Image (cartoon, rainbow, N blue to C red; front, side):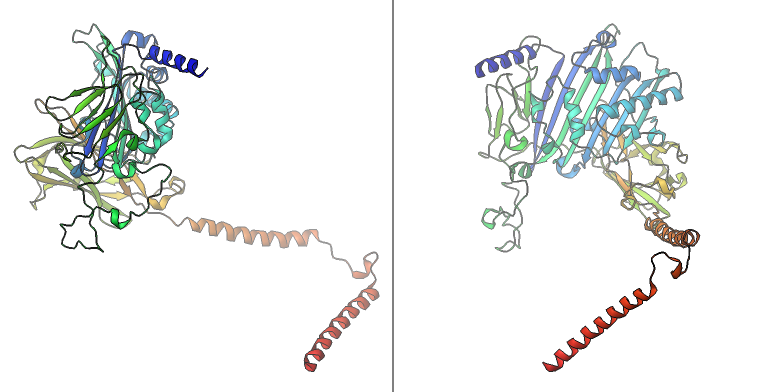
Length: 592
């Protein structure tokens, strides 16, 4: 019976893993010095536009396709992100930042409608449907969290039968949203193999959300040929995470890290203060050897739709390490080495699990990380509960050419910036440099109706740092508008930076970290004290008045069965007994 079920399972997998060029998946592993690993999962699927409009769904999931059709959404971009990307240690962002979102949830889409009000109605419909599909709070993206960018995002779709005048771009963020396993599960259900086979079998919530930085992205767009005769719908799902190798290798049955014995510590003895009592960790041997099972908790369970139209296996796993590093695959995988010497790829068959070991034998070398084209950091300035300021540092590391980009900020309505205080200057200069900002688009906020939108076209000279600052006022909210943890502060969405592409280069996006804005917060204990005090006074007053109105006063002799003489005698007897007991105890103490 067991052999029969195994044979049946293999037949089902053989039917599932058929040759089809409409689905591809790839896992790219990039070791980062000293002990980090960038894992990029990419799932790409395609369907013809005709079958999509006729609701013949195959690799484009029906649950998502019907939502986009109902909301007239021509292009969708959804992001779930946590953590902060470390530019200095990890280099440039994967995919040029195009698959990255701000902290929390970020969503932008092109919606087809006849007017602005109609586009917003369909935008609300889209948010509510996606909120239920991905178990997220997207339904909280209301008018106060929705903007209409002008220069930041460009459509990647090419629908020939849709006029650009009827296309509306809407963008919304939820920086307070906590990304968790509830969002990962529906994400995996959109895949053909549902996370049971292929590289998606490595996506475990315990590993993904233990990463130092992670981002889940979904992109849906329509693509047409140059003459417009053939159109298709493409959906791309991406998961990027940076794992700490040492922490990921910790066994699951021992989740609590314990101190390492002193004899097992790897110390950098080149430090002047190195001794038996002081140890500075050495990066030479830290996390250099690992396996896929150690990092992700399991090996890759075969492959999912790994063959192309000619029946040849496609590459499913790539690792970017120099060719002199020893990499040992286990399984019937076909290895292909990059001609440039920057890594190797493996094509995995569908029948057997795949394991790969990055050995510590040989030189412990890494590929050089690419330098990001721009460094950006944003922070609050000032103090007090009434006003403050925002300071953004934009650094161009190139020593030969300047850089142009669009700087986009979405601010909540209770954060009221003053546009006349906007100042951009070089960090080496004490005077303002107006030529740095070439174009400005500003849409002021309306209380409780919409937030502030600020878009700037900025140019930074070579090897320079631009300091962008402005002042703002803090509004006082109503009592019911404060969240339960009001003293924590209010999250401000990250700034989005779009580097304008030059000839021969693709677009690059960079997002700063989110900010935590403290607002004037009332003492929420005072309403409680007032309610308690008022309730006590009202209870006492009501009790006294009710007692006077209801109680009836009568004489003692008017009560039936009342014997005053017997009651007095009984009380006198109890008093004498108590007095006799006290005197007896006093005499006993004197005798002792």
